[in-house]
Image 1: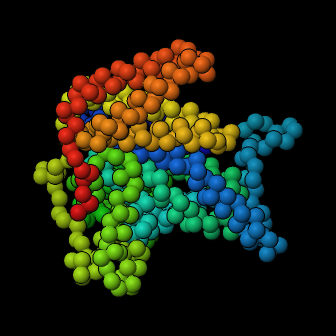
Image 2 (image 1 turned 60 degrees about the horizontal axis):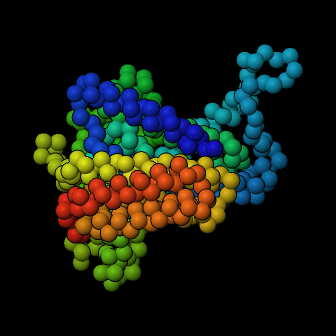
Image 3 (image 1 turned 90 degrees about the vertical axis):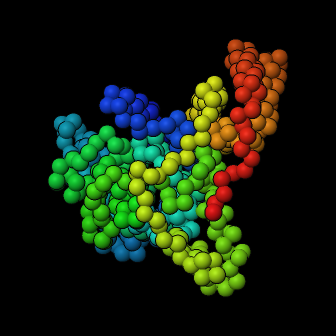
Length: 436
């Protein structure tokens, strides 16, 4: 199992502990609609990983096998690819292999260095920003935001790690180091920790530093790109100390809980701008220039406005409590289904897994529509629940699965339909939030 997937139970435990801290201190740091949107994006990212992992990891292994420096220059030593603990006969269990330890430390630091540039370019190149923006859309800052990951960006940023393959880093060291890097970043997405001491704050990326990175305030934008270490930001001029607490989000609020729209909206805006721009040079700059750049014909470059926590209005459409409970229950079932899909995908893909993945994605979109009070959520959710109920009934009658499970599915779908239609009058919004 992938390092990140193995850590998922720990992630949810930490989220619960953070919520308990919030309740005890009286600080409201999370909202159900926002948190479910974060987690939906995370689920979608993990499902996308089933299909893009072969590309990203396969390219790394291919480059490492065919073009590493050690193949061209015999004097360049191969990387040790073994445990840091000596396994020789007679060695005590705590004995350390110095060469292996050095390789693991070097791999961890170099992965973070590549992450810095990958992350920085994802904020400075518009097409890369389109793939990364998902992580910044939440207007809250808590541990669930850490799980709000993009589904498309990974297909573009893997190239920043190819230098590690060229210097011969074994893919096992890369995968584990990259996974540990991301796990570390999870714990810094919190407001429960202030500053952590002068030395720690100087060397490591901390919650204080990363809150700055998520700030939409002009002085905080495009700062603090590091994953584990903040020293790269200090060296390359992108460091900013936290002064007042940031306003979180993006300069043009998404105003939607839909994980599909969250991943696509900047790409859609780019396509619209390109279509209205006649000059090919300007079209290329829309794609590869800085986010916010637009030609004079479209109004010129956009400047981020000043914001304050006192006047900033968060996207928070009110939803009746029973309908919110409905949305939470649908998300929970989609989450369980995604967990089993990810486990099964380790054995290989088939048509059944692809169909299950499709239904999970539809469910996540439907949950978002319910919390947006979108009119389109009613027919979408009705069709989905009817399909689930019919499928479970057929399986129950034909003995294709556990009777208890399948009839439970029929009952769940039926009860969900009753709640959905009882409160259908609340689903009144017609359109997705516009980009502009």
